[in-house]
Image (cartoon, rainbow, N blue to C red; front, side):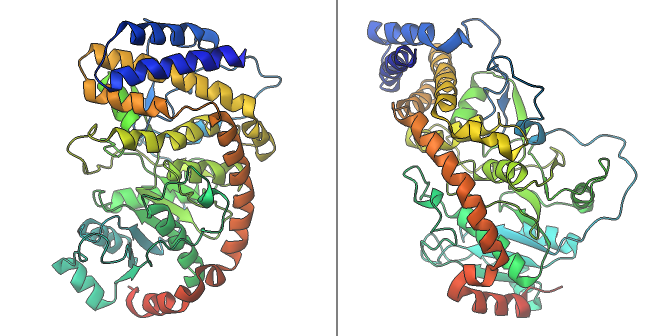
Length: 446
């Protein structure tokens, strides 16, 4: 029956493209109705309650949909370790917690101040490492008075990654046709983990440059999560979700605009990592932080603990729906995260996500959501949001399920290659290792 689903998807795209160009023609209406009628199992029927959508993206928007009876009692799904909730009023007794060895900021723009990260590093009693893009990419580095003082005192260091350099450039996923080459944040995070290994640091806190400072309470909760407070088992990843989640995907923002309920997923904006464990890498793709957590948990056996949802994040864009092409670039990563969330915490079962038939169902479910969402937004006079959803839907080519299955296979192989790189971090960093480590030794101390 795949061909009928494909015809329905094509009809949906035709209708959505008409919406994207401001039209509400009869052809669009017929296309959308045909699409909805033809979607597998009619999982999202008109008038039914909308599913919960992830607060930081839309990847979890389809997680409540069933896929038929399981042949055995399933183990917990990956999504179960990604959902964060407010910290409980009563916490379990404190346990001996590890020290945060460094705070690493993969700064997106050298013109962005890092004063909040300076305050966080000071509260943690740890050195601050700021990883910058080449100075000429945007504006000269924003060295505030506080940052200059930290650099001069030796409690902070700034390292500049060479243009277009990525320590994971040789991995298959980095060369996939869907790889996101518009951002170097994944490369900076991977370089940060390799630097931590080479410098002898174990627990590092990755912090984005748009996050409110983590105070002593936040840091204590993070360290206790790493130590396994309440569970008795140490975690290798402890991360926060955000109250406002301005950095969610474009489709995620559209879901929120349409009034869909949201859930909070962890992200790398405030994420502590045990760099000596078998954690995975951040792929060059949208949702790289979710993919990192999921592959670390499934393939590396890492414990992942959501710490809480009390942190705030500054808004980056005034007009969320100004760039429909951004929604299109994010769609592959959205689909991949959606499908992998269905995987069990069992590496032997992850082969299911390498099968094309599995991804056909995921793509079909996603198209159903996009169709319903676009129509709902158009009816509510949210034309700009509807256009963005239409652009995301237009990416759904017939070969998409095969591409997703192939990428998942590459992701599994690349995880093993990354483990070898973690064992030889100096070699993985290449000619940059010596100068960077010398800088850390002389300028990144407390």
